[in-house]
Length: 595
Image 1 (tube, rainbow, N blue to C red):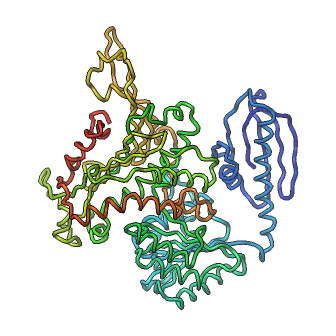
Image 2 (image 1 turned 30 degrees about the horizontal axis):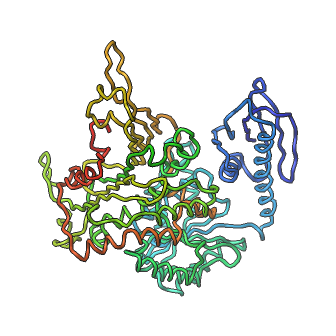
Image 3 (image 1 turned 45 degrees about the vertical axis):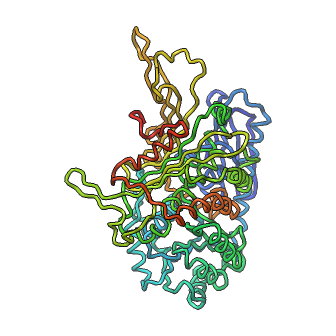
């Protein structure tokens, strides 16, 4: 049984095929409960599906309740809509269960991790799949197959996977039991990525587990990009579903420039339709990035401020406190601009700056993101600073430079740091600098969005703030990682007889506000791929627009062999980044004493 709380309406009962529901007032008519009993679906599944399908603001509670904001002035018609939403989802889902009660019509999901022996699969994909299973988000019938060139048995795969599986912080008594149940669903098939024969053998094994059910198949390509097309060709022609859907998740990098990206897209579309291709950027699955549109479009105080009239600049900052650490061979072929800026930071920028979409439908959101990317001014090389970290000793410890990595050429000019000023030539953002900064081997690990507002015109308290830049403006900070938070910097009077101003934070720290652990980005994106939700995945025209922006810049840097500015391991990066910010009358928000 589950309960929905809302405002009061008349008490009534409803009955449908496979479910029954009743509305009844309680707590002095301030709230309303919807109790429902359903055959084949537990309350957790129904609550989660209501949230995902209804589009209403709701929270799943531990007691199985869907809770929405109570409003005593809410009209009967809106309450009727709320009731209809719940009953509609309830009816649809129980109808599915009824149809699937016949084994011949029942569906199953087969998830194949291609490149199962790699680090990404071990550290992210398998743990994310287990987390979804642990939370009851995977279908009743599912099978997971690892596929790679390594010789391995089912038992060896399970041993490998088990080492990376953990339960949530609120772990339950049956955690070990859940792990065992999950591992029983994991199997392994060894094969070459370009072998039709090996994928045909995989198809045969998948069919054995699917046992005549309608098969839906998801392939996750956790492999180098140079073998994407071979694996897609074999999976599509030899191991795709006959009656259900077939989807393929593709990891970045999606090419090195416009030309190679277009060639990759063209090759993939020889074997797949666009709606079968799920280009994953795991940053889009992070909680604070997904919250961007909620923060802006559901809070009246922010939407009117979201323009050139009130915002002075926007900063997108990504930093890591470690170097390439043996991964330099891969990194040297791409560099920080391709690895971070062209995808992670640019995607966040597009979400931040887009106009209000027609709806929350995936295509409507992606349409608005593409408009932003196509409105962006070509990046000038003089608006870009590149750097590369060098060896540095601190506290008796010597940290290696980028070219000290044995997998990196000694004469490499590949940037490990980049800062750039970008502009959007449209009515909302004309003249507002969007500053990006990304680097490795810096003083701290962070990813955040910083929105610096304009000075207060005719500020009465200029005498108290003087030339202090921090106190002269407000700043909204959205910290994506670590320690997820949203805080607004405001000026406030210090208690006392004098007039002294202080910088204070209105702070929403997620770990303090919410007891539930934040899901990993891969969990959200895998669940969306299984359910066919494309909102957080990248469409081909988005990709084309992103590469069109960065390809000319990359070409100029590489053809002219531009020498990066060297900075010590563990520092704040090249000095040139500060000059770039000053050129656009901006101060980096992450270098002030009050961050």
